[in-house]
Structure formats: C-alpha cells, structure tokens
Amino acid sequence: MKPSDMTQYDETPTSPTPAPRVAGLLAEFDGPEALVAAAARVREAGYRRFDAYSPYPIHGIERAMGIRPTVLPWLVFGAGLAGCAAALAMQWWMNAKDYPLVISGKPRFSLPANIPVAFELIVLFSALAAFGGVLVLNRLPQFWHAVFSSHRFARVTTDGFFLGIEAEDPRFDEPSTRAWLETLGPRSVETCYDPGTGRELPKALYWIGVAAVLVACLPPLWIAKARATTSTKPRIHPIQDMDFQPRYHAQAASPLFADRRSMRPPVAGTIARGDLQADDHWLQGVVGGQPAETFPLRVSRAMIERGRERYEIYCATCHGLDGDGKGPTAIRALERAEPGWVAPRSLHADAVRRQPVGQLFQTITRGLNTMPSYAAQIAPEDRWAIVLYVRALQRSQDARMDDVPPELRSQVQP
Image (spheres, rainbow, N blue to C red):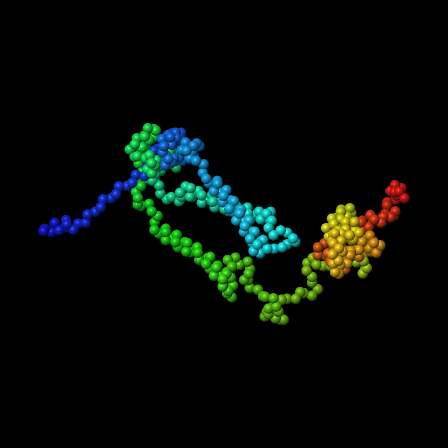
C-alpha cells in the first residue's frame, strides 16, 4: 500500500453541520392599520401561535388578535385576600392565643386594631403577585427569541411593524403559510431560524449566581448562630449611635478628679434651669407663711372656663360635677366598701367654704386623705383656675346679696 493511500485511510470523516430549524415566519407591514388588519386575518385563518410587534402600543390590536383578558387581576386579588388572612391570623395568634394581653378589659382580638398590619400585607402580597404574575404569564425571563435572527426586526423599536407566526402552530407549513402571508400585502416575508446552539447563558453566569446565593445565606446563618449562642463580645453595631463612646459608668472611679469619683456632685447653691421655686404665692399658695387669701393672677371669665374644664377632667370623678362629693368613683368605692377609703368632702360644706384660696391650692398640690397629689398632672396656673371654679360652684349654692352688684340688687327678688 502506498503512503498516500495510508494517509487517506487514516483521515477521520467529519459529520455534516445540521441545518438550523425553522422557527417561524416574520412579515413586515407598512403601518399600524395594516398590522391590525393582518392580525385579524391571521386569527380568522385559524392561526393561534402568532404575535404582533410594534414600536408603541396599538389600540385594538388585542381584539384583532383574539387575546383574552389576562388573569393577572384575579391573581392580585387572590394574593391580597391571602395577605389579609395571613395578617389577621398572625396577629390573632400573637396577641390572643400565644401571648394574650389583658388591658383594661379590652378584647384580646379586635378588627380595627389589626387593620394597619392587614393593609400592609395586602399591599405586599398583591405587589409580589403582580410582579411574579407578569413574569410567569409572559414566560419571562426569555433571553432569546427566533425573531432576533432577522436583521430587519431591529427596526421594531423605531418604525417597524411586524407579525410573526411560530412554527409550533398546528396550521403552520412554511411554503403554504409564506404564500398566504404574501397575500396580505406585507413589505417582506422572511423565515426565522432557531440555531439550536449559541443562545445559552454563559456558564460563568451560573457560577456567579451560585456564589451570590451562597453569600446571601451567610448573614442569616450568622444571625441564627448569634441568637442560639452566648458570647461576652459586644454585638456589631453598623450605626453606633454613641453606644460605644468613651465614657464613665455610674459609681466608677476616675483619676481626673481629686476625690477619685467620676460622678460630679452639683455645685452648691445651683438648681436646674426652670426649677427655681421663688414665688411662694404662685407655687405654694402661701403669703407670709399663711395660706393666701387672694389669687396671684388676674381673675377672668376665661380663667373660670379653664378651671371648669380641668375640674371636670380631674376632680368631678370623685367630687361630682356640682361639688357635692358624690362622683361616680366615690359612689363605687362606698358600694364596694373599699378598705381605707375616705369619702371626699362636699365642697359646699362650711369648713371648705371658709378655707382661703391658698389652702384649696395646697390641697390640690399636696393631696389630702385618700386624694393624691395632682402637682405632677396639673400645672400651677390650672390649679389656680380650678380653685377659682370651686369658688364659683360655692357661690352658686350659697350666694349672698353682697355678691350682687349694687346696680342690680333692685332686680333681685327677696
């Protein structure tokens, strides 16, 4: 055998490259009206796997193509109902079942109190359903389509109007379908091919996705480990908020001061700003060491109205609206025979009417018997307003002729 024959014998035969598969036909039309008319004709001919492409939305194209209304609104509605049910169930379990709280006899589960969280989950579930529904119903993400093999299709984002029929349609036959499309008056009809290869995602993207998922799992795992174990190390604070600033702890020693104490005593003779109690008449109801006989501010009708408002908020519950000492709290305490309870005195009793206004102010400020001090709840000016209103209540039950102005005394019946 000759060497040349040996060379020919050792050559490995190569397989022929397979022809690309026909994916469909793509027809270009002159404008939106021609595209709508062609879509209607394609639908009437019995084709179902086709689509229209244009640079902008065309009104009426969905009716011409026979596209049914999307089920996306129903998906969003169902997701919203699921979010509402999940929110109500979660709050019922947390507040009424797993860790019930009894607060002043209020119901453990009340619909109005749970509406804000339910609203938030309705919005969250609906938004996720809308986002995911659009992707699923449109078969996205889809990184390649057969129409991308057409160079003319690049004009679809500017001034091109195209209609494509997929090869998967049962009525599709390339020669007959092409001939029929040409009867619709298109600019051109071309065949789109599916190369079969070359449109896969790069393998590097898969590895990048795997690495991203693994990295995303690290923070939750680290948090779970921190919650399940104990450590003497301080927690990581991305935002410090002065949590770890250099500072002294209470009762800690300090070499900076001679007494070695980090807590500095206040300077002798100083008080906090706004805490100067210099006006005994205004703040204590005392003048010359005795209860004041006069008010420290100008008496007016507005002051009486302010006193009535404060009296009905703080005092009427025990003393009653007319000051007879038979308010609802006092009546209930007597009915229940509360131990240690001292019934409030009627504000119209002679002993109370003879008290100076400063003594009434001191009673509100310091408390008396089972009546607590109201100095923390009622400001000094409101305490004086209440005293003025109490005086008005007393005058309403024990008015004298001297209380009537001289010019009006003739009109008062004896």
